[in-house]
Length: 146
Image (tube, rainbow, N blue to C red; front, side, top):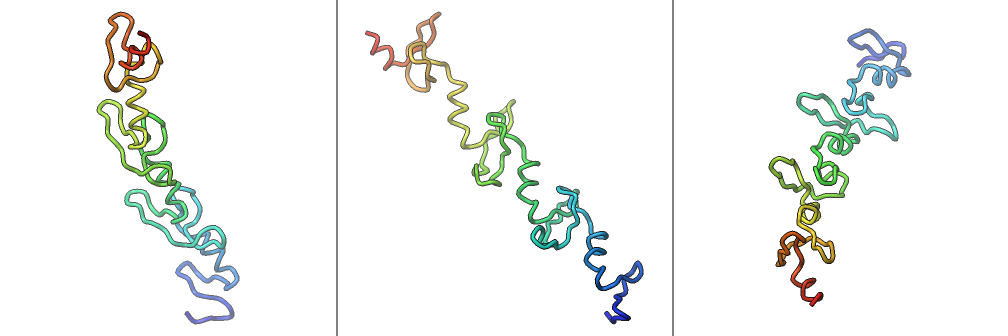
């Protein structure tokens, strides 16, 4: 716009050229995740953002933290079920009555639910002998006893 004595016109009045950055920060919408102005802030925010329906604006720099904070949690390890952070693929199982389970937690979950061998105390997921009241034993463990 036209400059008039170093001032630029704004809908709410006039702002000095040297006050523009502060005015922009003071009037910017706030990121719903970090509650800071959605505007370019050197070394901190680029000014780019996502508009999340029903929530508002989210700094592009806050996106991963928001995903981690808002994702459902794996019932086994209690970590967020998302690929954000690079720790997990984001793939999961929905276990009825329990909730989400990371694909990466599946084997450990199955082991935790499996009966334990009375000889070696490791999970039984293959062939075994049922020793009735004593419990179950791997075929290999039983044969080592004999």
